[in-house]
Image (cartoon, rainbow, N blue to C red; front, side):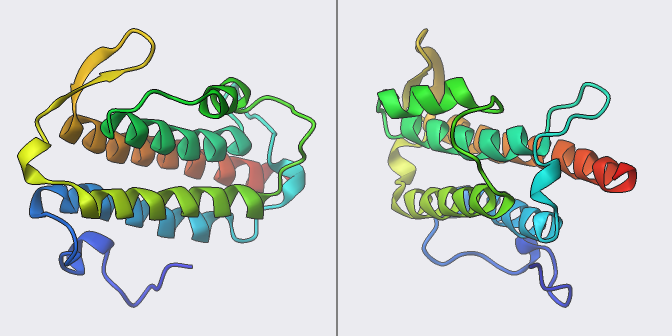
Length: 172
């Protein structure tokens, strides 16, 4: 859970292992992790796949947040997505034989944030503007573009998750 005595992550100082250009990405991902863990701490499994007013379910957001981080950081390494990653993408937010719990989905997200921070720690300023192909169409981006998008996309979906969870808690 987030420590309310601490300022937001971006005001706690730089992470020593990361290049200064990548600090905002890491700070956003760490802030999202703290907020998501606090938000989902007492959320009931029974509401995980509920939708309100056509909004995506909390379960979808949790799967999607994890999957997108994994995919974007794969592209940043210059790798193609594996069959496992493509299968994960195809099942985000859809019923499967696997029954997920809130705890499992949060732990999966936490793991992916840790992996992302580790990868950011190995990034070199020299290649941040190198191009990388994204998706099957190999649309152009840069490594720093992929990292930046991972941060903004994570925060966008966290915001949607906050609203959805808040509404579901009020209704149920």
